[in-house]
Amino acid sequence: MRGETNRGESFWRRLARRRSLMQLASTLALNSYATQGTTRGIPCPALNCYACPAAAFACPIGAIQHLIGRRQVPLYVLGVIGLVGALVGRASCGWFCPFGWFQELMYKLPTPKLRLTNRFNWTRYVVLATLVIAVPLVTREPWFCKLCPTGSLQAGIPVVALDPLIRDAIGACYWIKMGILGIFLAWMSVTRRPFCRWVCPLGALWSPLNPVSSWRLQVDQESCIRCHRCQQVCPVDIAVYQDPNAGACIRCLKCMGVCPVNCISVNSLGWSVEASRSGDPGIP
Ligand code: SF4
Ligand code: SF4
Ligand code: SF4
Image 1 (cartoon, rainbow, N blue to C red):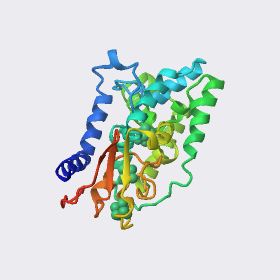
Image 2 (tube, protein in one colour):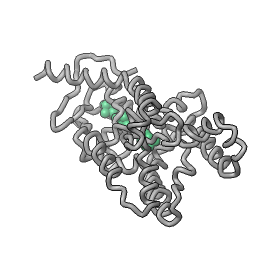
Image 3 (tube, rainbow, N blue to C red):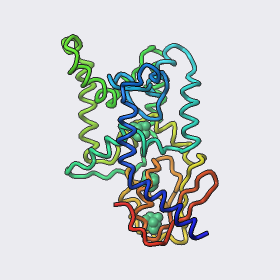
Image 4 (cartoon, helix red, strand yellow):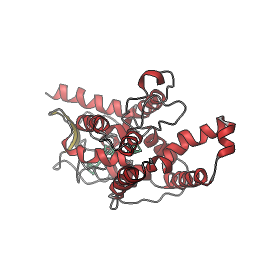
């Protein structure tokens, strides 16, 4: 029905306009401190450092390394990641991950911009296979965590600032971590979400689930006029009409808001919500 269709589409577009509020709320909830006693053992659907003094949940990538280091199969953590991915694909990256949001904010800085394609984004799987699985298995140490810029930002800086004993004990490793963070901070300000696109092992685990998740995008190819507006606003620089369920898509719905012919729609649990032609002005 046209009336139902328009109401449904407006819901997604209205929701997408509030995405930054959702990202703020998620960042606060994942780092709420108050619930640490009861929730800290539960893996959250985002890369959010467990060592952050305010973290309320476990980081799933940290938990995987910890269990592999103890020679245990991280079935529970993989189950949580798989369940989230099966339901919404990579939507957690677009709506809930604090470090993903942080990268979007950094890109707003008024610096020269460097546009890069996603051609070499298989590097995420190299990181997953080496730093998250193989090296922790051999060394029993969580090497991804030791180098992770999320951990440096959320834990390394505040812990050193708050604790004089730790401040006195910092050595070369700390400054290597800070150097890696500095490189990513500079890269984030010139390129869209570089950590998500080329490094993050959590995004790499979710990517293959985008085409099979219950929440998918679809594009009416006959209506699409190949104007590329979708790609211009896309935080991961993909053309949604080429592959609406590409592994790189973080389900942010920004493309839906700017499409001039409203040919992008959400297909959730088999229920197709077609794009409205009611003159909705789109997402700013
Ligand atoms: S890919 Fe980016 S948004 Fe997704 S979990 Fe990793 S850091 Fe967060
Ligand atoms: S914005 Fe819409 S019409 Fe333009 S290329 Fe993207 S999907 Fe096609
Ligand atoms: S294709 Fe659309 S929904 Fe996917 S990341 Fe790009 S703008 Fe967001």
